[in-house]
Length: 306
Image (cartoon, rainbow, N blue to C red):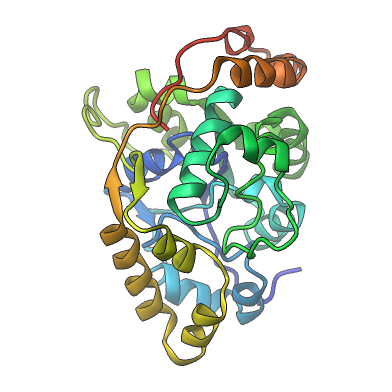
């Protein structure tokens, strides 16, 4: 149930999946003059129990400048929301007429990219992708991260296990599914497909040419990445004495200063083959669910930058 009788009231929510260029989609949509985008690219309200209990009014103050003006579309994003049934329920209770967007990616590439992102942000302490896969996401003694599920590299690529809940909750006509390939080759089409139900003016071809967000990087100092990315005693103390807005600004600066651009090394072909076989039946189920062919995801190829 909602924490407040006064809802956030979203019109459009990007709910998944992580490491699929959903951040780029968020900023593309936010450029439209009639889209009232949240002021942060991750809207944690529906998954963060503390935020949710504080209520929708507090969330509005944190993520938006105020009420969305008439004629504008209120839009937010949390790339991992689709994996949490309680968050899906909370979103529907708060905004029953919301339209949701899901961006998918070749699950092998997504898993590899997610591993490098987790290392970059201090969520992952193992130095090889193979070791992380063998260890699994839930490891004794590993500090809790501020983003639940970030080490679920394989689990989060089983898209057909999660989409049915979205379809059942919001209705087929309110769930828009696209892929990284779609967003890379025809970004304006994807954006216009999402804007059309609201009657907003379409964007012109070439609007997003050369624009990309959340590009690959690595840390300068592992200790700083670990401090910022994990739920440690130091951060819990800071949380008690520093306002959320100031804390968020400080952490963003720490991330920015501690990161340098990089390109991930090629994935081990043995690990790639292992994951292709893992995901093959899930890709087939996804194709049946969406009426779309994903067999090209079952073929080995060099990974894109993580």
